[in-house]
Length: 263
Image 1 (cartoon, rainbow, N blue to C red):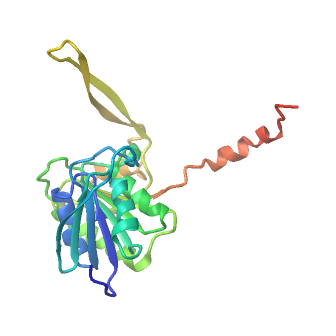
Image 2: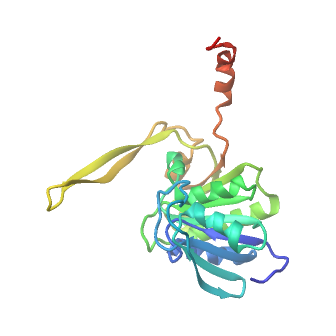
Image 3: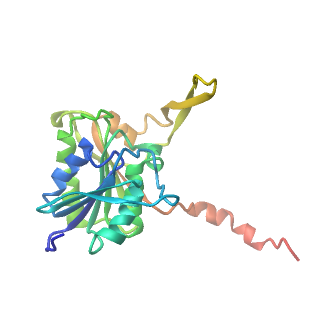
């Protein structure tokens, strides 16, 4: 790995190192610095902040040329970030990028997302981190517009930084560049996944289940949310924090401190 004065950028995802989305993100990020990619060897979507503790992790060097080095691993997206920081990189990266994910990570999906799990891990280290997703699950999705917006957002973050403890969840509507209206910085929509399970029976008469379901937007008319922005052809940016504390509840629960249960 060469050392120079250019920013060191770590790129990962949850769709696998050979997904079209990460190829697009690598293409854009190479304009800004030295790129090290470490991504899962196969798709590991929906892994959230999972880490591997019951089997060994292995790293494979896929390629190395110019300002780009690519590794794969049998681990999760969060494993990728941990391995990069602790075993691969000569120093902490200046920026972590995850994606471009094939499929939305808006609203409550942020807590299930392996793409955002990697970004949140970077945030824990105090590294500016951005997750990118496109609202298209096709493996051959058109990333033309995504690359334009990713380039703009990366440039802005490298110039201005992000508050410590905060990362960015960026979702991009499906569509050509002229079909998108711009960027909305917004909040996470209140919503939930309504799980349904497709129950089937195998030849051995044993039942098994496929997870299905649909997303329910609990505030479809509120125009300050990411789901509204996306439905109206805006790229949504939600500043996301790693502190789960409910500070209002901390105050309301203070009365518990005055109760002595054992005398």
